[in-house]
Image: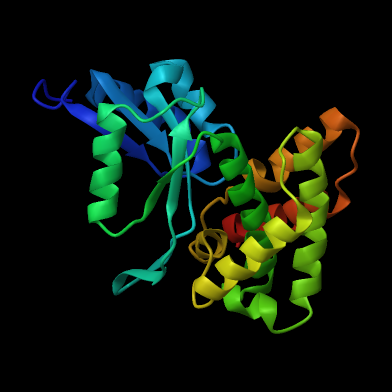
Amino acid sequence: MSDAVAGSCQAAIICGKAYSTPILSQIAAEILSDEGVAISIQNGMGHAQQISSRLGVSRTLGGATTHGAWRDKDGIHWVGRGSITMGSLDGGSPNEITTSLMKALDDAALSPIWTPEISKAVWKKLLINIAINPICSISGVRNGALLENDLWEQSQEILQESLTVAQASGIEITGPEIQNLLIEVVETTSGNRCSMLQDLMAGRNTEIDSLCGYVITMGESHGIPTPLNSMLRALVKGIEMSSHTD
């Protein structure tokens, strides 16, 4: 990295795959100024904590987005307008740099929202991802198909199992609250191929371990069985394995 780039940035937006977080954290540490902040807008849980181990809690933001996009040979398609929820890990208010970052996101029509409860926001995104991504990926369908056939019942069951784990972890989310959000996201991104399906179609590894795998681990810590998460994780892993051996 050139000296001109090192330490020159006020903000780093980390939105890579879960398994790339360590190297992306290292890059962020190199390019950020001493006061610069990094925000994790990634699927799954625990990424902001990994980043904070490099940068410190005061320079790390958690984030979650409901925007939908997918990429093909023609480019990137923005198929679902949503928002970006962000907040500091210690529940503090935005400082000058984070305020500037939010303005930049707002100017780009990305609808940033600040919250003092970022853990709840990230858990919500995790629950939505678990209710959509594995089922759509295994079935090979776009998000909107969940509302059109028997897949919806399966989505509701995996959502409830995962919500039970979230509530046991101290996250105050109600069933109707997360169900209404799920319907909203599925309708908004109905034409979208979720990122997990895109990964499987491209023969890439998925983020299933940061989604269902995380809920399985947290369920074990609370003594809560998670058979649906275990099944979906195994099925997605099987598809991954098949794509690597064919």
